[in-house]
Length: 236
Image 1 (cartoon, helix red, strand yellow):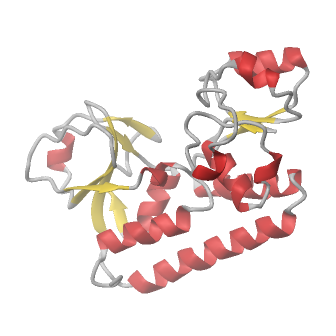
Image 2: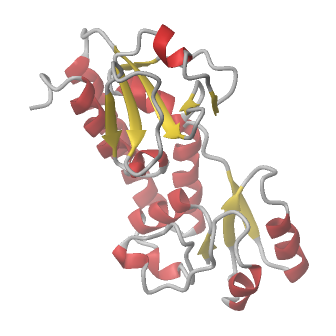
């Protein structure tokens, strides 16, 4: 098996199915995955390297961004599973599906139960507190932000935030720098290492771990870290 989707790879590790993986992408940088051969990017991987691993299943990104990979896999007779992880329900479905595929249904159920319990604990801790108005910038100039219907939007809500771009017309998209000035944003969040250009030094930028953008089993831990940033008086 080869996973081209980092969130699926993290899920397989959490399920105890790391040994089923024959390869990894260049974005799978955890120590446990380092010994595996890399097939390059998750989108547009090195197909020769991928097929040389003789996978019985390839987990790939869904959508139209990479049409060559599924076509080549079909030609080679390799079974592949398209993954979409826009919102938290998609993350839950991925965990269930991979639990079934790897014959680890009980482990998947345990992960899901733990996720919900930890989310609920965060909600209970911040209950009644006013939400902090935040923007999450993935990077870029103009800034590329997370909008509604995304797992990042849901994480912000669980963590006691209000997404300042919850009315964006797309899940993710660019906005003018001026928009950051007129939306009464309390905090701007962005992943460590990303290029962020803010129109004013008056905006408070806080860097968060890049794993926030990997929709897998680690999301409850990351949600708690976000909640601690937004409501430090509760999470001491």
